[in-house]
Amino acid sequence: MRNDRERGGEPAYASRLDDRAPTDPRRARGVVFGAIAGIALAADPEWDGHRLSPSSLATPAAVELALGGAVTASVARAGRLSLGDVLARLTPWLPDPRLDGATRGALALTSAGVRAEDAGYHLWRAGYRPPVPAATLLRTLPAALIYAESTAALVAASLDLAALRSYDPFHRLATVVFNALVAAACGAEGPEATLARAGDALGLATRHLVEAADDEDLERVIAASAGIRRDLRGACDGVGATLPVAEDEQGHARELLRAAVGVFCRSRTAAEAYARLPMAGPAAPLAGVLLGARHGEHGLPALWHAAVARDAEPLLASLLG
Image (cartoon, rainbow, N blue to C red; front, side, top):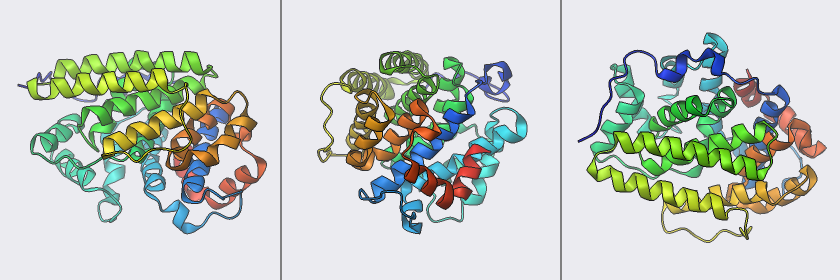
């Protein structure tokens, strides 16, 4: 039986105003610019800064990044991450055919007063377990910037926001790890320190999920955590640019996350990093986020920076406030 712990009102992280990070705005902009450059390269590996096509800004990764704008807007309005406000801002997406069915179901439950984590749990228990693509990690990206200085708040926010898409333990833990990687990279930490902070966040998130898991889910949590930890340890050693075809969506998501971390770890300078990015294939959006966090907005090649600033202005505005 699930170990439910009553948590009335706002989630714990929502009231931690002093946990908000003094994230360098240049690095926050770098994260978003890097993500959009990666999206362009995933859509067109030959992209060299020429005008972004509408199709490259309508890919699943771009849609997920746009959904992240709801998180940014909520913080700008309330001075904190209010899950209720985020849900209200996501609701207008319901008529949009690009919004996945899992999020539609979760939003329907939350509108009836069910908490986000519990909404995800109810859908999971009802057997609604659609595949979750790696691009979904981009939806919760603003949480990495808001709570970069508080691992506990970052973990809590990431787990709740991820549950709106899926209660799957792998997806929720991968969301925590990716956000922790971004937060650490924004602090100008090198690859070793960045991976260490992600490992700490993974441990904290795993403990939370283990405490809340029933017998059926416990093995899933432990297996997902162990797999992600292995991926983090091996990401900097010989991760190829060409990704094998995964047998399932989770396997594919693990490959993309591992490849993105590999690009981040094996590049010492911004020039070297961005030279590798076109070879990252479908991992380019995730890798672009990490590179933008580490090297800042103007680490991007000048032509790429100009194209993103020119062609993705509405998306930039929604994410950067």
